[in-house]
Image 1 (cartoon, rainbow, N blue to C red):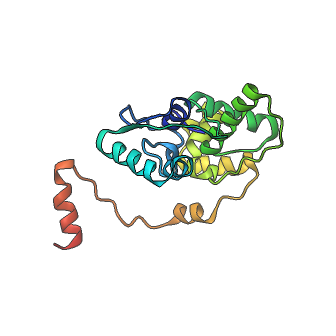
Image 2: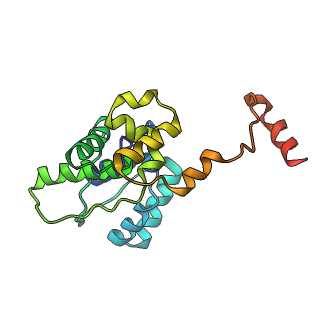
Image 3: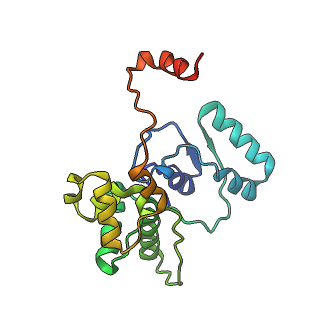
Amino acid sequence: ASNKNNILTDFLNTGTYDRNRQFHLTMSPSMDILISSNLERLLAHMGGQDATKAEMESLNKTGSYKAEITETKISGAYATEAETAATIKKLYEDCGYVIDTHTAVAANVYDKYVKETGDTAKTVIASTASPFKFTRSVMNAIDPKYDAQGDFELVDELSRIANVTVPNAIEEIRSAEVLHNTVCEKDEMKKIVTDFLGM
């Protein structure tokens, strides 16, 4: 499952891995990649270490490579930003469960897979991120009215609608002392950093 940076979907469908493309900042930032660290393992499994070495060298030199995808039971697709948001909203409205943006990408792509294949096997989508980590994106997906609220107001509202306690790490930030509040222009950064380091 990929987000708008659908380089892996393209690779699985065409066999061409090409990082020479526009990079998108999305609401699922852990999926904002143009080089997949996990793909190298898949290539080694499919074609052996020698083939993988050549492909990685080509990626470093030219930004792309072509691989023979002879046998794989991997299905790939991607979710747009609108589809990701719609998945968060639908799941919340259907059952009151709030998912994060990355899980929403997986859920959306899984729905596409089921529609395309008719596969009705029981499936588990393992969520590894908390919606509290992406509160604004999650809450805006549920209802755009939330965008007018402040960050901690959104945290409290997410806690209320999801019936989940706010994680301690976020509660600690709420009352934490501000340690660094230096603001500078880009051309002042070097001096600010060296002053901060006492150099």
